Image (tube, rainbow, N blue to C red; front, side):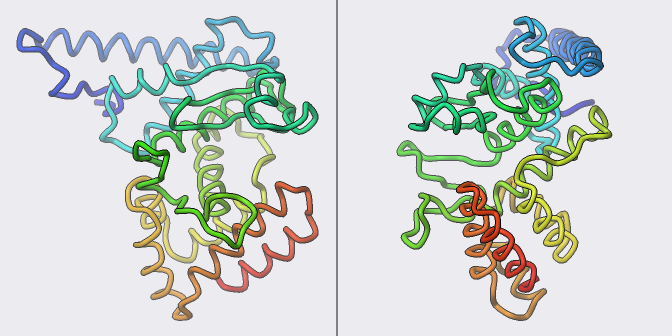
Length: 278
């Protein structure tokens, strides 16, 4: 049984009969099969998001969310509906206003997630074709699943840590977090998009692929989904025997922020420094 479609016991009323649960699961499976067929048809022309109907967009959302949820077998049917309900499509003006950027910069933002407002997908972004929209929604859903916050939007789990003063942005371990997230999202979509070339967070993905080979995929996945960076630090320092995990994270962040500012020369320097630590 596909566990992402499992109904939680606490959500079942006293008169909830087993056959009802089975029928719900069967209906969700049929929906996912139908939506996967729809997405495959859309990918033949790879139409832009702005041209998709509401039903076609819903199919893209369902397929992407289902893929992301496979990373945590404890997720349930009601959680899937919650994730889907928190995904919103917005236009260029809304993206620019919400992020405090001009229209040119806003076109580079394919999507983003906030614990307070949910996921926003830019219908006018560069790379807003069906293929990249699938990867973007999968990527942001992984953030939604893995990154948990308290009531003040302070992260209490996941890879992105607390605020730091030595970087221009507000959080630490963003480079590592984005690299792992995009690496997983690309793999999740590999069957549907076998010829896709990585287009986002390229440097972060390349370094984290090396990291994964060095310390092991299971440790990295468990830390990403459940444990935060503490177990990663312990395992990394034991593997490398150099005690430089914090330095590695700083290099990843500086690379990421240089890349965001389109200072690709500095980003490449920071990438090489991060790779040396590995």
